[in-house]
Length: 68
Image (cartoon, rainbow, N blue to C red; front, side, top):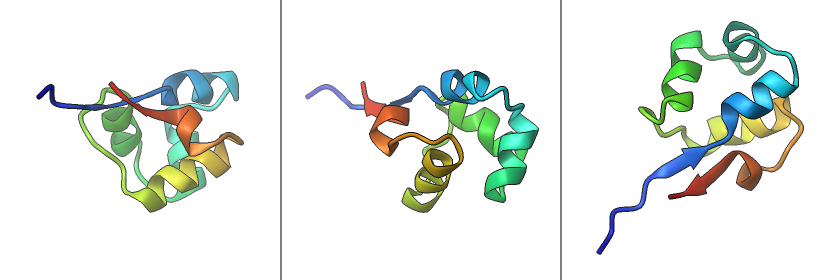
C-alpha cells in the first residue's frame, strides 16, 4: 500500500495574502520555523494549528491541506 503524505498549499495562500512567514507565525502564535517546516512538508501541523492557519488565511482547511 502506498504511504500517503500530507501536502499543502500554505505558501501559495500566505503569499496571496502578502504575509511573510514571520507575520503569519505571529498571527497564529507559533514560530517562523514552524511555518517553514510545514511549507517544506517536514512537519505535520496539529488540527488546532491547521484550523488557526485556515482562519488566518481566510480559507478552508481542506484548501490548505490534502493527501498526496
